[in-house]
Amino acid sequence: MIIHSNKIYMEDGCKAGYLEIEGGIVKHFYPGDATHKADGSPLKADADYGSNRVIPGIFDTHNHGGFGVRIGEGATEDEVKLYLKGSAANGVTALFPTTTEPGAMAMLAKMAYGVSDGAKIMGIHSEGPWGARVGEKGINTGYPKVDMGVARQMVEACNGKLMLVGIAPEVENAFEAIDYFLSQGIVMAMYHTNANYEQANRGVDRGITVATHLGNVMTGMHHRDVGVMGTSILRDEVYCELICDYLHICQQMVEIVLRLKDHEKVMMISDSGSYAGCPTGKYRSMWGNARPDQRNSGAARADQRNSGAAKSDRHTITITEEGYVLSETGRLSGSSKPVMFGIKNLVERSGMPLEDVWPLSSYNVFKKYGFADKKGSIKTGKDADFVVISDAFDVLYTYSEGRLVYDHNVDKDIFNHNFVAENKLD
Picture (cartoon, helix red, strand yellow):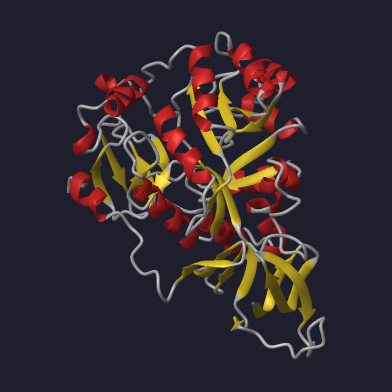
C-alpha cells in the first residue's frame, strides 16, 4: 500500500511525499517529485490525502474509558472493543487502559495479546489505589493502606502487561510497594499525593519517574515549598503527564510548564472516562454507583470501598458545556476531551508548531515505555501507525500497523448508547 500527502510529519521534518507500507511497516519514503518505486515500477498512491496532515499515532497512557464505556469490573470484551475503536476515532493508535480492578486487568491483558480493530493495548496503567489526596473541592474519604498481597495480585492479573502504577510517595509502606513493582519492570508514578518537596524527592530517589496528570491532585508550587509539581519539573528523571484541555490546567500554566520542563520529558494524556463523548447534563456516577446490572455485584462494592460512597461527592456527575466533568462539589472527575483536542490547543491557542507538538503525544511516550524502536514516529523501518487529520484537527483516518482502523466515511456511530439511557438523569 502507498499513501500520499503533502504534509507528512516525519521524524526528521514535515515532508511532501509517499509512504510505502508493507507488512505493517513503513518500507520506503519517496519525496513528492518521485515517479518510481525502489524496484523501478511506477509510483502510484493507493490513497491520496492531498493537503491533509499525516501525523504519528497518539499514545494515550492515562484513560479510564470513553464513549459510554467504563474500563473496570463488569465491562465486557465487546464494550472494550468499542472503546478501542472510539480511541482510534480520536487519533489514538496505542494506549494503556487505566484501572485498579484485577478482574478488568485480566480481561485487558488477554485482549492486549490479540489484534484490535482500533487502538492497540500496549499495557495497563493502575492509577493507585494507594493515594493520599482527593483534590480541590473534594471530600477525602480515605484510601486503602498499602497491601503487598494486592500488589502481587495486580501483577499476576496483568500477565506481563502491567506497565505503570501510581502511588503517593508519603503513604505508609509506599517504598516497599515501589521496590516490588520496580523489581517487576513496572514504571512508578507519583499520584494523588500530599507530599512536600522533600517527600517527593525521596520518592524520585527511590525510583519514581512519572508525574501523574501534572498539577492535578498533587501539591502545587508555593514560594516556600514547590511541592510535587515543582519536584516533577525540576527532576530530570521525571516524565510529566500533561492534560492540555486547558480545563484541568489553565493555558498559562501549561505554557509555564513547557517553558521550564524539557519537552522530551512531557507526555500528553487525556485522563478520559466513560463520560467522554456524552451529551452535556447530569449523570448517575460510575464511582459511587454501578450500572443497573452491577449494583449488587462485587464490582459495585469495590467501587464503593474505593470511593467512600456513603460520603462521596460523586453520587452524580455533571458534564458542562465547556467540557468539564464535575462531581457534586465541583471536583474535576476525569476529562471529556481527547489528546487531539490538546494538540489543537497547543497549536492554535498557544502558537506551538505542530512539529514541536506531535512528539509530546507520540514519540516521548513510546520512548519512556520502551517502544520507540518500532513506534512513535513516521520513519522507514517503524510500524505504520499514523493519523490523517484535517486543518481543523478532525481525525479522518487512523492506521495501526498499516491497517485502516478508523475511516470517518464508514465509522459513524462509535458509542455505547445504553450508557446514556441507563445513567443520564436530566
